[in-house]
Amino acid sequence: MEILELYCDLLLARFGLIQSMKELDSGLAESVSTLIWAAPRLQSELAELKIVADQLCAKYSKEYGKLCRTNQIGTVNDRLMHKLSVEAPPKILVERYLIEIAKNYNVPYEPDSVVMAEAPPGVDTDLIDVGFTDDVKKGGPGRGGGGWVHSTSWWT
Image 1 (cartoon, rainbow, N blue to C red):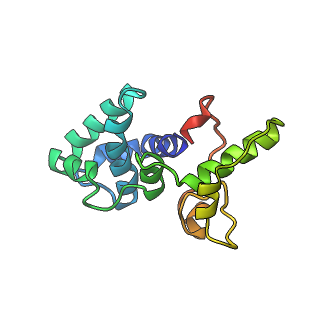
Image 2: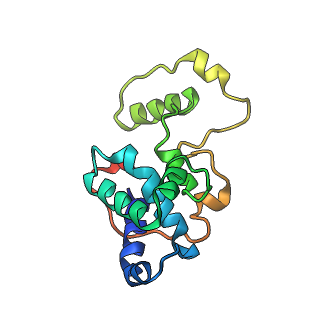
Image 3: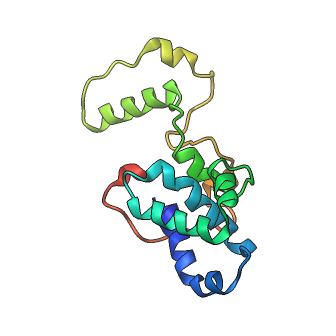
């Protein structure tokens, strides 16, 4: 959600530029395409996002909207696509989270030996590992952090 909020803030800050130009500014391409891509996936939680995406599609063409929804132009934020994917996390990652939760709450928990045996030997899986390279984990270029914290932390 924070990524979407940052993109919305960017569009709001550049609203004058958006209104005055007929073509999409290259500096706004990732923001616009990401918002259009995310809208159908979050329309039940964020009805306003669908309205914004519809307005952006009306401004930049329905064809552009179709390309964004399928990410055929490749400008949708990779991190957001990963966060909103329907792909289940690896079993070993889930098992390690369960172990840590049990430790924190002093609950006896016996890890699944089959899942633990699947872990590569000598590799300690990072609980916050999301499959990105180090530059993306650190924020990557142009992906600064904001100070806003949403009360429903399950989004991030």
